[in-house]
Image (cartoon, rainbow, N blue to C red; front, side):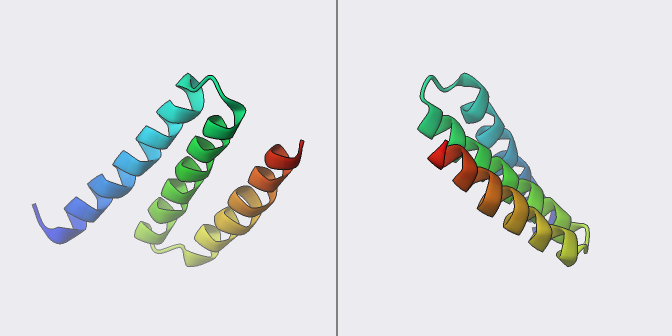
Length: 73
């Protein structure tokens, strides 16, 4: 396994753990933090796929807008 495989596995782990936190948490704040971790992981996967524009839009739209909307709702 090379360093690229380890980076991919780390990004995959962040995404999966964030999704599990989102689903299994009883608190809305913890669920939102898990969602943010998941969305950052998905953005990391976009970077890994050499799609930096999609990664930036993922961060701006989902992490920025949706997480703030959930926090203030």
